[in-house]
Amino acid sequence: MKVALQNLTKIFPSRDKKAGKEVVAVNDFTFDIPDGKLIGLLGPSGCGKSTTLYMISGLQKPTSGKIFFGEDDVTELSTENRGIGLVFQNYALYPHMTVKQNILFPLQNLKGADKMSKEAMLERAEWAARLVQIDDLMDRKPSEMSGGQQQRVAIARALVKMPRVLLLDEPLSNLDARLRLQTREEIRRIQRETGITTIFVTHDQEEAMSISDMIVVMKLGVVQQIGEPQEVYDNPTNLFVAKFLGTPPINVFSGKVSGGKLYIGQDAVLEIAGVSDQEVTVGVRPEGFELAEDGKLHCQLSNVEVMGRDVSIVSTNEASLNPMIRSIINADNKVDLANKVVSYNVKPHKLFLFNKETEERIPFEVK
Image (cartoon, rainbow, N blue to C red; front, side, top):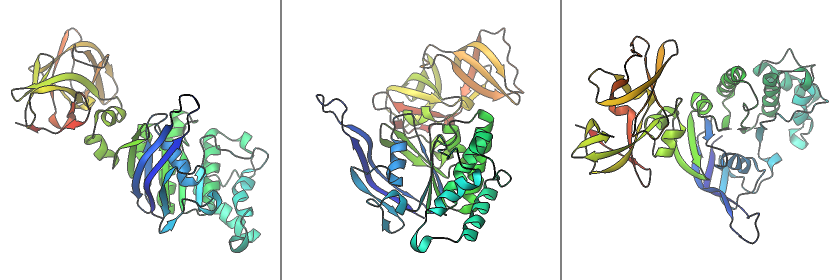
């Protein structure tokens, strides 16, 4: 099911009646979500991602704009009539019911032409349970299950109605690191098997990038960038997107372009074309450093962290806007901790320039 958002805006009234300043939670969001894709809505707390999800679900009404499921305008349609499956962060299972009863509950409330026989409901519930691999837990109650198992029950309950659109609101936030990894892989598998258009809200960029077909990065209610995860990572449109995506985060420096050369501090690290002389903000991905004795960027060595196949070099530089610089290099490279200075060459495709005032990306060419 294709989902189209047209100029979607949500404004909340101010809590301070005297100040009277409204809060724009989502500002003019336009995006066509392709049929059968998994889309990640990504951003920090307060960026408007959950509000967007709630408008799609019908739990909140847009201040302006339209929402379409296929050719159907569902903007004014009630939640129960939209054909959505919704999974909340806190699972929202009925504690007095078994797993089977929780999954059956949405089907038991169907009326009219949608009403199903008892046999058909049981068959559908068993299908949903098998899909999320909890078919051997049908007689348990939520209190007898782990957090990951409860989350699977919530997903099965949302899928059992065969929704047109599946909506997931930070479904992994309450799980530990190991369960998060396992459950996000399961969500990706389930989405591919069912082909249901899915919208996944998270503040965790690693989650969004690992399972989404496309991501939407938001900040203060405004869409910053939309694209495939790797494309957004490789070509951030502004400094916010560059800093939000990536683990470890991007290294940010004060720099300047002068006479066709890019300087970080006193070091001329790259010869570039197409950029006028100006002060800039420079972003370098952790994997964008090449260790070299005659490297052009010089940093003060602080520590070396061995991570198995990779090594993380921790250093400092007066021009760095981060407290520490993290450089990820292959473990075959040997770093002498006795040296006080570590030198790098910078990979041009892992380096980004941003306008110092607007923070928008500045394109450049390497000479």
